[in-house]
Amino acid sequence: MNIDQLEKIQAVEVPPFLLTRIKQKIESNRASLMPQSLVKAFTLSFLFLLILNFGAVLYSLKSDTGKENLVESMNLSTFNSLYK
Amino acid sequence: MTFEALYADHSRMVFNLALQYVQNREDAEEITQDVFVAVHQSFSTFKQESSISTWIYRITINKSLDYIKAKKSKKRFAFFTSLFHENSSDLIHEIASFDHPGILLEDKEALKILFTQINELPNNQKTALILHKIEHKSQVEVAEIMGLSTKAIESLMHRAKMNLAKKIKSNEG
Image (cartoon, rainbow over all chains, first blue to last red; front, side, top):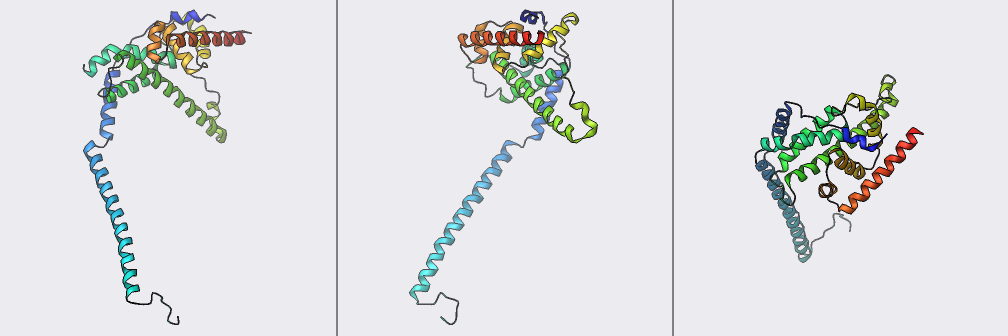
């Protein structure tokens, strides 16, 4: 067996209708993909909701400390137990 | 340049190169389809750092190697599932189909054995060998396609030949 036998291999022609099949594959890929504008809209709305949630959490943390300060300044009990 | 023109210029090269990797018409058709879908998707982002044909050669090589990898893992999975199913024992003994349309009938047996040995080579040695020996590319062209130096290609070719000679010897002996 000789490696030079590889040189005997001949080039062959491309089967017909392959271009049509490729075009069909490209079209089916395109149809299954979400439009770019829709992807952008989803990303933006997700980011907006994330920022909104983050802001709401921060705001609630801030307002909780305000309540505690008010309770302390009015000398109100923060315990629920009646006998303390 | 239109997609049709690109296909007309390069489809023969893509199909034949894929054939050297898989030695099977159906698989080569599958790879050719994948290559041109990838070309269509990324043609707008193609940077003119290399020629279009070098770029398509690289895509074909990558797609062919990916295809072989996927097929091997599929076979491995089929083997494992066959262990648990009594009726699928034929899968274990499945022989890869050798249907290279560019090989004459009288050379078929010898080249089938040679390709079995080539398929066991590391991917870079296999690619260098295919491009140089079958696709008749010069070492400079192979170096450009593989993104390596000419010296590296020389060394890859030398190692590929040595490994093949060893495999052939052990097969014959």
